Amino acid sequence: MSIIEAIIQGVVQGLTEFLPVSSSGHLTITQHIMGVTDNNLFFNVMLHIGTLVAVCAFYYKLIWRLIKAFFLMIADIFRGRFKWKTMDEDRRMLIMLVIGLLPLFLLFLPVPGTGMKLKDFVETFETEKYFIVVGISLLITSLLLLLGNMCAQGYLASKRHKANPEGRMSMTVVDAIVVGVVQCFATLPGVSRSGSTLAAGQMRGVNKQKALDYTFILAIPSIIAAARLEFKDVLDSPEGLSSVEILPVIVGMVVAAFVGYFSIVLFKWLLKTDKMYIFIIYTALVGAAVVAVSIIEMQTGVNLFTGAAIG
Image (tube, rainbow, N blue to C red; front, side, top):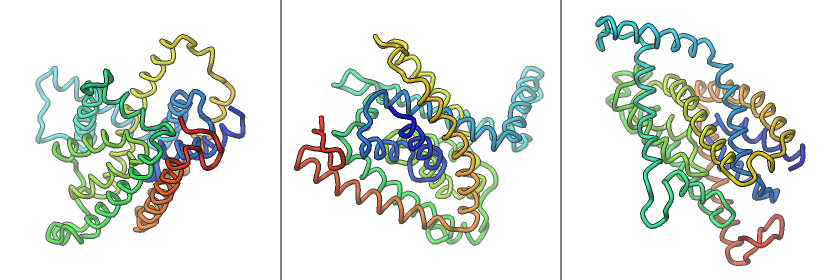
């Protein structure tokens, strides 16, 4: 992989990790167009580490509050002073984050007849052979964003919206479970994690900015867990890290971190100014285009952009 290719993919990752357009889907599209196939999974995870730096830099104040709240809450539990009803917002978010992560264990369930866990089975759809899955998933993302936006505007929940047009400022256990389950589906390339979990929060009646903050903070342990698993897979492979090109990986991570930070700023502004229709239209158009290209490629048996045979 060249440095230019690493920069391009870093920009794509940084922009799409936090914007509700699916970073995995756009990376798959970018790699499909460029014909990049070597060490994709490892490189993708390293780009996610770059965006992890971005979200930590943007939310460092909230993260520090949550860390302090965690240790204070543990101390209260041991002293018998912890009370659910009197929790402040930081402690509530901590508990909701833990609950929201629990559904991810579903990804480790075995898929009958494949010999693979669900997470490994889903990763097979990131190959050229299943490129059409990316297009269908982007269309699903567009639909979820549409439903979430309609709920936030009160079109699908008029009574609740009139009673509290800004939405609830606190997450509930049911909210966290719903968001966590939806996040599992976001492992499919093309289903936006930030978009689908934001939409789930909006459909549950949570304030859109609160839902977005929860979504971004929830991404931190998810990215860390994914990186750990991918490192293990690479180290367990016959080649280990010897087949990894270090310089392109570092360049891609740095670019993803810088671009990712500014994409968070952009997303929060677009959400605040009710411009979500941009992403609804965009993901629908890109999804339709990918489906069309995929159908042509399945008929011809070659990559429309590189001319290489599709394996």
